[in-house]
Structures are given as structure tokens and as C-alpha cells.
Image 1: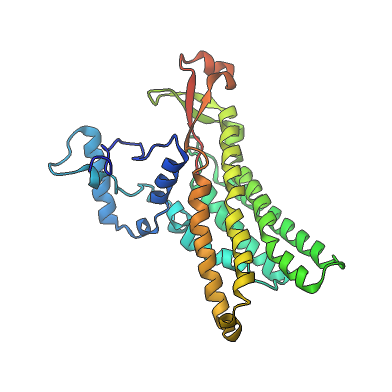
Image 2: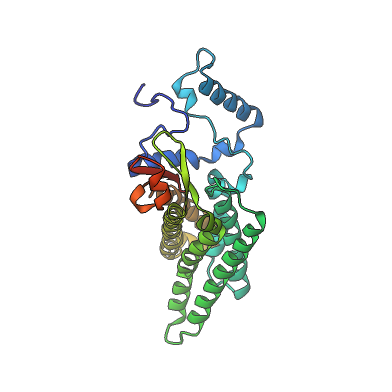
Length: 314
């Protein structure tokens, strides 16, 4: 029906990006893991369809229903670092972060692995309107991983020295350590991995999609919005599983069969991750808007538009 398959528009979502629900439905498509397995042949067919659409030479019989299933053409992004690969490749890391009775070595390992994955995802899904030398990726990566490990280890040491806490309370509190550690490190990760945007600026577009100029103010807004999503994202992932597992582990079934604890824990983490990712990245439109009055004077003088658009990245 027309309501289910609206007319295809190149470069635009089939869902209303002005509403949270519309963005949520859009990003459910974006993170669909099935797109990871699109063959090169199918990908080239879709690119050919898009080129035909732009040139007005679509073959007969192509419908709006077919147009909406075109996969993202960012085929140069490695599979684990695409948004559609975030959940399947990130869930094992989340399970590792939330394992009880972590040693210092295991804490460092899982925080390093998590922030390494996050760093590559942040870099791969940045606003790439301005090229950045690759050595800056390594600078940002080193800073992001160092901050994550330092925060996590520091919190663990504080808990171990909290003599007033009972062993049971210590264990419970220790399960929640990954959240403040990951949330704080995620902010550092986004800023450090995309810091070149702050120094060089990002492109801002007018109503017709033409580039008006490069703005450092828009870059600051883009990074602030992205960093906020990275704080919200770990909330369900790092908070819900410890609470749920604290209840489930008391069930007779899991007490009789302790080998089931890890598979159940993994499923709980997977469900939490699957909910958290689209919720977090739906907080703000990917193509965000900003008033020209907030931008640099030279940009305001270069256009008659009152509102400009920028790609905040994911």
C-alpha cells in the first residue's frame, strides 16, 4: 500500500526524521544485521538502480517497495564497524564487560577491546566531509583506550578498598562499574576519534543541499549530540543485565545448572543491546539543523537561509 511504501526519494529516509518514532524506525533498518550478508553482486545491482533513479532511466517494473530495501552503499566500511554490525560484533564484548568476579587483567582486556571496537565504529561513521590524516586516528585511539582503561581500573580499585561494603555488596556494585567507565570513556572516544572535526569544521548545507561553508560551531554541535547518544547507549546495556541476572541467578534452574548462566547472560545482553542502540542513535536526526545566527559570521553572510543542515554522523 502507499502508506507502507511511500514514493522513493534519493538520499532521504522513508520515515519522518522530524519525530523520534520515525528516526527509531529508520535506524531499525540501518542496524539490520541481514545487510551484512548482502552479496557484492546484489550490492552492484542496487547501486545501478540508484544511478538509474538519478538519471531517470529506471527499468520498467521497479516499485517503491523494491526501492526501500537498497542496502547502504558504504561497502568500504569493514563489516564489524558498520552500524549493522555493531550489535552482533559488540555483544560478545558486552558479555565480557559484565562478567562477575573480574580480575584487573580481565577488566583491562575487556575495556581495551570495547573501546577499540568503539573507536573503529566512531571513525567509520564520522562526518567525512573533510579528509583527516590517518595518524590522527591513532592519536585519538590511544587517548580513548587509555581513558577507558584508567577509569575502569580506578573504579575497581576504589571498590576493592571500600572496607565498609560487605562482600555481597561489593560484588553487586562491581557489576555496575562498567557503566560509568564505559559512558565516560565513550565521550572521550567520540571526541578524540573525531577531534579533527573540531579543528577543521564540517560542511553546512542550505535548503537545496548546496554547501554554504565549513563550520567549527556545527562540528561542536555534532560531537555534543553524538557524545550524548554514547552516554545513553550503555544505560540499558550496562544497567539492565546486572539487575536481571541478579534475579535470574537465584532461580532453581540456574542454581542446579550453573553452565546455563553464561548463555542466559549472553541472551539478556543481546536483547538489551538490540534495544539500546536504535533508541540512542534516534535521539537526534542524523541530518541536524542549526540557525545561521549560531554559526560563524562569514557563513551567515554567504546565504539567505535562516536554517542550515549538517551531518552529525553516527
